[in-house]
Image (cartoon, rainbow, N blue to C red; front, side, top):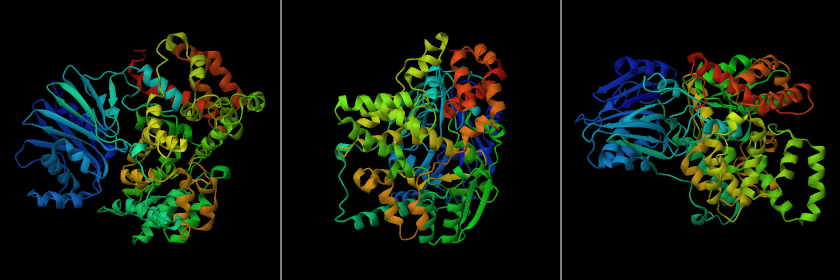
Length: 635
């Protein structure tokens, strides 16, 4: 696991590359390497996981014509190594880095099709004077770049890019609009004007100063999906168990000990169960609790799993110090990020990082096997839409009157109102609307005229494209595809990478294995949600080994008690970040709208927790990344 950085084109020198690498030292504190070849500079910081002695980077081919820097893990590198040896390739190390380099030499850009893992890498082809960039299918590992006038600068995180003298900093309004809608910036853009992300499942080739992107993987199209050849429910359960166990198995490859982020939910408990079935010896588990706030505390469930599988269990109690932790979160995202789950993720990563370098996580289980209540909402919404309009009108009007707008929260009343509001819209728009912090109408009301003139782009294009690939004739399959294409890579996996690497910890996600996801999409939604129960199939597949209370428990997200903390321990932060005079001076948001949101929430009249946190994190980001450099302006 590494941080990588470099450029191709005029500009920069060794001192610039060294500064960029120092900014990425948290991603790889064990080693540093660099290669400068005229117009091309490549560097890395290494967290040593596989082949601790001879896996240094940058790695150059025997003829000196290809140089690689690589962030990630190739889980099938042993099989790929055997394939390459059979084709005459020779190896000097035991590392997956060398396997990747030889695969590029053998297959060229098509090497990515053979990789099973998480990766972002760059290869400088000195013979053809080309740079090749690639990112894994789900976007587990980040890769940012800046390209202008023939110069391309790349890095694992924006903070390194910003140290190159050619790269400036200004706010990208289109990315800001997406952030305000969903709490994270979109694929292909960043909050900084001119700094882009290489999207998941893409490669890019720089030749003659021109950059060409190519998409090499997409979720399998619904039309091509067939239900698995399962003659019975029991056979399907066995197949699910085998596929999940295999995704865990390939992620046990390491020359250092491994642990597990154990929330006490089904997904992380399944991973622990699989590791025991695979005869992992010492097994350490790590959990975070919230002290007296039992409504968000999952420690009793995590303890039950730890006892059942005899793990070496560790617990961390998160006190309401989110104001301090928010600055750390921003420092490692380099972008505003409004998913407050980043805070407990950072805490559990810090606790784990004190003991280990590698941990497994249950991220992706909800999207892969149907864990969010909103998937059942799709079922209910379909049924409600079939009720004659004249019969729906009364209940919907009553819901709007009795359940005032509190979008941005996740309470039952809010969901009921959103459900009623979306009844007349097409299902993909209805579903995406349930996931937004600010919908289009709310953003139009919130933004000042100065900012509003930049708004109005279609922030839901990618969601609709994912929906269009749905299979099984089922809207729930479309909902899964939306989350697999948007929320999972751009929120959850981004959060997992930044918060784990902030503490020099490699985090592996078996449920995000691309083969497991492809298999899961062949399963009809009716089987995954059998009996109108979330994760019914996954729970059934592991019911004989998990503690009964884990199988029976309701879904609980990995969240802090944000709504309450904003009214209490974080109140000073809110009142400082969203003070009317400051909001007015920024010129982004209407002062009266922000004042209303804050006032209603602090008084307990309505709940706007996620909306307020979205605005607070943006303000903190602007202070740290724009104000401090005198760079605040709309592009």
